[in-house]
Length: 371
Image 1: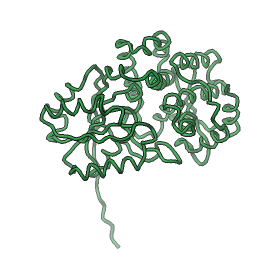
Image 2: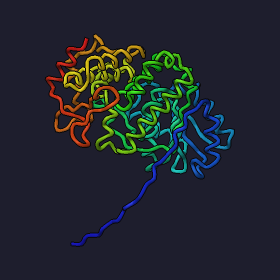
Image 3: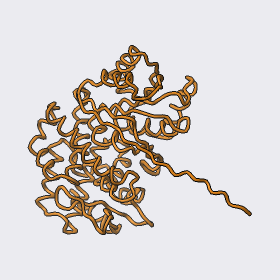
Image 4: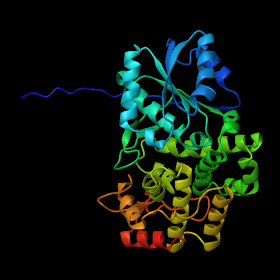
């Protein structure tokens, strides 16, 4: 018997820029011309049916005029499209169009697009580079930053995927002007979440400027776009692979993801997270981690953002309790929750441990007591 040691130690620099601005398609073309993707000249533009006409087609024309070649690969808009089946269909279409390893992926759209496209890029041809061009507030606050890519299954959300960092992220605030008010509100949920977990001053800023944000004030929107990126970067930089600290970004998501799935995606992601934040504030209050006044401030701010703060009447609450067990933070069959400590801080239960076990009975009591 013999043993052969395979040495594969390597150092990888996955650093990238996040550019926040307005009408950034021209800047994207300039960056590509200057070598952002090296010698690659062909791209697959992945988008959804809502974004295709508004932004994907104009961006395709700008890049084609700049000497690059590409095609649009679109899929039906909505969380229900974030599946293995959609990913496989996109891959098959790219293969049929002759795409191989000498290409890059350009994701143009919101969170579903960036999740699907980033996952596809990480596996297509065993990995091709990709760029995120975020067109929604939700994507700017969450999905386009941090490198987590995944798809949903009927049993759980975001548990099939990989960590894959983009070459660059563009956050085009001008795109927010075409979003329905409901989508603006949905993105504001993740923004409130970031303030709750990391920055009391940012939370106060949101309280002062919520009406400006809902009206898509350019100045206020640029502030929150940058602050969202800074907060998420500080967490991801310390825990890229979600081994501990990065769990704090799941604040509001244990209940939020469960209720989003049970709603059949009638609730947008941010709407479900808003309800999840209210539920987890109630749990924090019960555990003495925050005051009633602080919990009321969070609930009030979410309501002012145009977000739901109650569990919909059509929701089967026993089914909701059972659905909590599909959360990725579950360990050894036990529910675990990330909880905030006051406003602007996350509870650390042991050194490096930011989620705590909660009994099913306690979770049920919280969910059934929510008005």
